[in-house]
Length: 404
Image 1 (cartoon, rainbow, N blue to C red):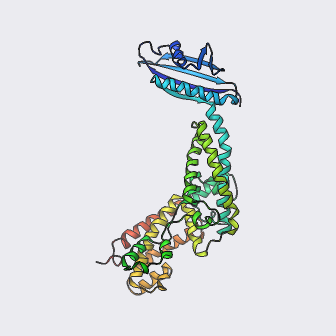
Image 2: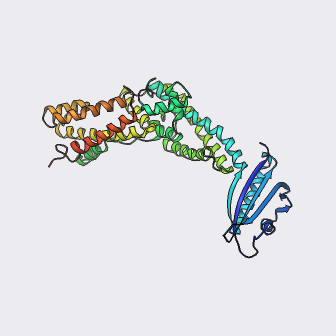
Image 3: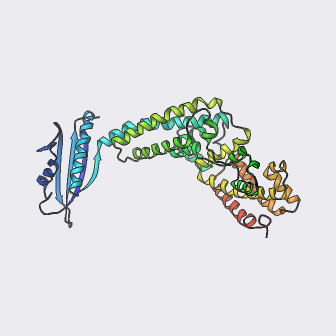
């Protein structure tokens, strides 16, 4: 890097002769014995910097501004340059001045050094998720699951013809962590409450069965046995890295300490992600869990799909509770939802009309969760409204789901 420029705009309230002109402002800086100003030079601990200053009164305000420019020779003097800048900021703060950064090449320098490291760890995470999904779920998981608007948006960017790679390279940094580290439940918590309520002795409880109600992330489910690292701790580190990434990506000021923190976080995360990559071939997702993994991936990427699945689950859990209330047989309790509804209709507990209205909603849910067709955002919104209306009119506080 060539010369380093830092430019400040300092606002001072008029207080008699205090900082009323450039000369008095310079004297303020020189109250620190390490600072000496000579014409267009400022000397700090025997190191010279080019010093330019311009000042005027603010129109119609009892204020004065000082625009100062400090230029260092090259990146080798950054440590001493930072000390000088810290000293200047402290002097201005003591004088109750207001300092605004107009330009900071030191921050630009640290951002430029941080960016390729952040990009590398980000793409390593994308590699992990792509490998996990393709080797366990299959080639068409994104092409047939993502809403068409999202796929079209990715195609317009023209970065790859492969949608499986494209979607994970266009997915937001923090959404990558959601897919791996966000805990989710596969069992209805209300069933747990009912079990506890009906249990008279603790010996009757099955600890293994109770633990199935604890929300677990994909990391805990599939990676933890190969990579001994807690998902919550990893997620905390990734979230902090995301905050630092935003500083770099949005051209905000990245200071030396934030740069060093960025590098330390990457050093901590990288070996864990690589360990997870090396374990991909050992991971086996049970067939009955694959659908939930797909749902989790889709909802991490697309918020509208998440809303649909949440509302559909409300309907699903109410039907399961109704069936369990009517039929205590354990084997029948494991039946698929469609079979349960059919039995409830045959016994006149639910109406044929209920089944007719539920069928298209259930078919859409299967299409969205099992990669069977391409779906538009408009269709997701329509079906989300439909399942919400169905729940309100047919399920919520309605017989036979509530006994009067």
